[in-house]
Length: 83
Image (cartoon, rainbow, N blue to C red; front, side, top):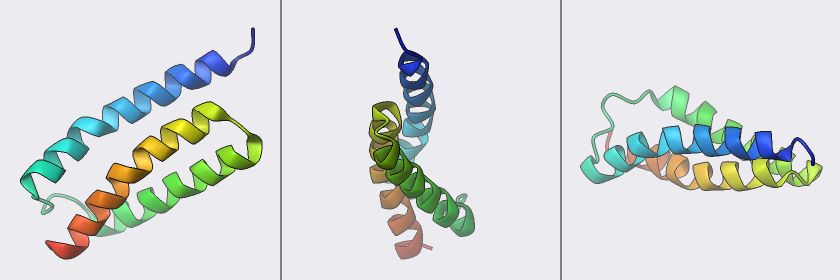
């Protein structure tokens, strides 16, 4: 047994904790309370973690960051559009 299960648990928890806010923002289109700078850095960071996971072949890192990247990029695009 490897430590991958810890990675899967951590990935699931951090990804799931982000999703309610993402769903709320996408539904309401209210981005006033979101910092543009924070979402630019956050989305780029998630993309970097995704590619780092690909380089390492770490499925917990790949899957969790891929799942997070979609809503994060969507919210960033909404922030740019609905400022």
